[in-house]
Amino acid sequence: DGGITQSPKYLFRKEGQNVTLSCEQNLNHDAMYWYRQDPGQGLRLIYYSQIVNDFQKGDIAEGYSVSREKKESFPLTVTSAQKNPTAFYLCASSRSASSSYNEQFFGPGTRLTVL
Amino acid sequence: GDSVTQMEGPVTLSEEAFLTINCTYTATGYPSLFWYVQYPGEGLQLLLKATKADDKGSNKGFEATYRKETTSFHLEKGSVQVSDSAVYFCALSEAAGGFKTIFGAGTRLFVKA
Image (cartoon, rainbow over all chains, first blue to last red; front, side, top):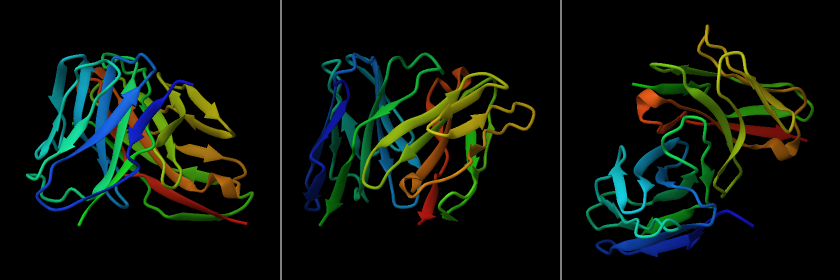
C-alpha cells in the first residue's frame, strides 16, 4: 500500500527542547510539504521541497528546520526558537511541485504538545 | 495574492438533508480547484477536483462545479449521512502562485441522525 507515514502520532516536549517529526512516503513523489494546523484554522505552509537536497521556506518557517537527503523522507525539526509550537503538524506529498493539476496526499499527522 | 474564502461553520444538518458549502477564490490566472476532507484526528484527503472552467468534480455523492465567471467552487451533496461529519477544505493551485496549494480556513460539518 502506497502512502505517507508520520511518526509519532502524539509527541510531548519540554520548553527549550528541539524535537524532530518524521515523514516518509513510498509514492515516488518528487514534492513534499509540511503544514501546521491550529484548532479551528486552516493549514499554514512551513517548508516545502521540490526535489532531493533542495527545500524552500513557506509562510511560517521561523523556528523550524528541514532536510531532504532522500526522496522518501522529509523530517521537520521544531526548534526551541519556535515560540508557540503546540499544534497539529501535517506532512504531504505530490507527484510534482511544477503542476497545478497534482493533488496533495497527506499523512495522518503528529500532534505536538509543549509542556 | 491568491486566496480562498469558505463559509464559516459549523454547519449542522439532519441526516438526508441537502448540503452546500460555499467557496470563492481569488487568483491571477487559471487555477486548479480542490475540495479536501479531514475526519477527526486524521490528515486531509482529496475529495474531488476540477482543473478548468465548467468542469464538474464528483466523488462519493459530492459535486462541485468550477465557475470562472463567479470565481466559485461550491460543494454540494444531495443527501448527507452521519459519516459525512468532518471538516471540508476548499483549495487552489496555480502557476502564478508557484504551484503552491492555498487552502481555505475549513468548514466543519455536523450531521445528526
